Amino acid sequence: MTNETDSADTSVDAVLARARFNGDGLLPAIIQQWDTREVLMLGYMDVEALRRTLTEGRVTFWSRSRQEYWRKGDTSGHRQYVRGAALDCDSDTLLVTVEQIGAACHTGAHACFDVDPLRPVVGSSSSDGGSHE
Image (cartoon, rainbow, N blue to C red; front, side):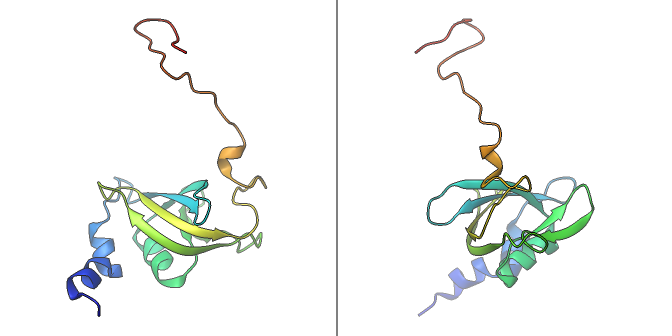
């Protein structure tokens, strides 16, 4: 049996009302492979893109450069099927878990973060000028 309060909290309209879009009307969306938890990419959604993502089963983004909606795979065939979604604690970022088919990055890389890995300096502080290993 479904609790009415729980279902009301997760209805599409309730999620859209809770989401805190930035000054440009956009919500950052982190896209993560559902089974491995690998972060694949970051995109942006407006209210309509979020609605489509939650109701159509495929991730829809708002292109900031082209000023239009787009879905991963409509031209490349590398699709993202929605497995789950969650707003963060501030409701200003969305995590979408997906089944990724093909490459996630427009460069052809598996994930957008495979392209330029950085080596963080763990334990270093600009105030002491040194690194702690």
